[in-house]
Image (cartoon, rainbow over all chains, first blue to last red; front, side):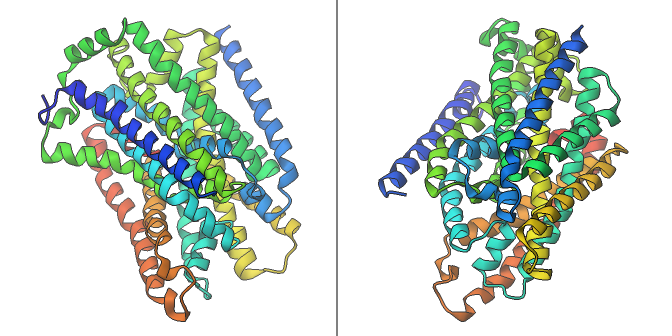
Length: 38
Length: 472
């Protein structure tokens, strides 16, 4: 346990959650800007 | 037989690079053509080439070595780089493209001068000094890596590896300009993507799967499975993690990356390229760390962790794939050096000669001067690289952090500062004008000096890890 989380949870955070959040952010950015007709 | 296969792969790669260089030559007879490919690049070229440029030999040799040495603690780098690239494409790219089109800028100093209405060219000239000094050292360090890649994969002399690397780069960069650089970097980026997708899969499969790898890593050293590494959840551990994350911040404003946004065909290309850029950096970084972790189980006794990628490719794959991995390492090196050379050339020719000293020359004359300057800067980098002095690694620390610290805060902070956008009147540029120089010069000097000052301790402490701290 590190900081209250099992190490596999940290691993998931690094390789799944953060990359997924980054991808969702850019998808949202793309959709919103496309909607503005950029 | 093995060497013949590697040389054959290398020869094919060299021919492709040269062909792309010749094909790119049609754009390179004007200043904008030579330095930003006439602002005609599509999204997929920008996305792959910016990541290939941002990641050098450090990604393939350094980050795999870091995964080998510290295990999942190295994933903090992934976190920083993924966030850095995502933020750059969402918050910097589009605004930066809008401004550089509005001001008709083709270099970062061009943009800064227009943005801050610096009629005395002070910002431009200070920027040029920072770019020129950092880039030459950075390119020299990458050429050093080229020499080492050749000697470790093929057993050739170090000098031959450096010379082959610089000859190929100078040919396609001078003949094809930024068009050749960008499309060759696309090729480099695709090769790096495929290599870092395949290597961890092969490595983890060779260990016997994910679970055996994890249990064996834990048996070798339990710290390899700790997010905060050997330091644990202490001040040192947190500082180490934060500094790993900080590497990714450079993506927000390193001038060699911002040039990609300038060279986009249209704003919409940046919107389209954003998802691709983030997806590519995720595969790059996670692939490198996981490959290093698998390598630690397979080859636990390496004296130098940064040789884990050549070792894995040679031991786990047929000779032809060893050749492919040599090409992938070279791709990472070349994609960084070509962009740096053309950046430094633009700083001299566009920012000093065309905008300050001799604005009256023709486009062809500027273009020729640009090519000549590229060769001269390449020759300086070669002269610095050939002696293979260890101080080169200090240079790269200085250069990467200096470039990023000088430009990233300035560019990022003032993109959204509408008061300075040019819509206000007269004295609008004055205050940030000085603040801007202060931030840039302080960043360019203090951060690298801090890094270099810490370096001797690192080398004394664990010499094998010194270039693991050599950023991307």
